[in-house]
Image (tube, rainbow, N blue to C red; front, side):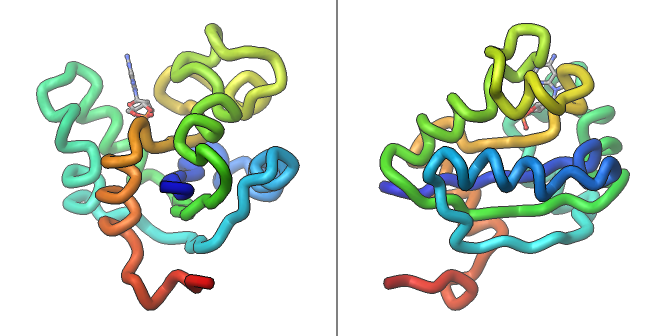
Length: 139
Ligand code: CMP
């Protein structure tokens, strides 16, 4: 599996920094093979984050993820899942390494600028949740 799924979140689209984030992705040799800027519906957001349903931050998370546009992406490259997690940095920007997207751009643990899949299995599920096969150029 050379693909992972990414979301550029509303805190980043609102600050007009999707290009800066994409530059970091590309500078690290991940290729953005599919991308769309969309409005996430309440239902779609709740479905995507269903695993966090019982968490205390769930309601806030859904409100935040539907508060502005998001950019959903498929990234391709060697060890894409692990590589993108390293490029993103820790969920909480206070714990993120220097040079990571979250260290550079995230505002706090919720408004943390990006999401990336945490396993190959979830990458497949998350890509299919947002993209049809005919939206991705396969070569
Ligand atoms: P993400 O990697 O998309 O997965 C779940 C999201 O919930 C996370 O990034 C944050 O945006 C948000 N979140 C808010 N509070 C927390 C928390 N305490 N721990 C983990 N994630 C949180």
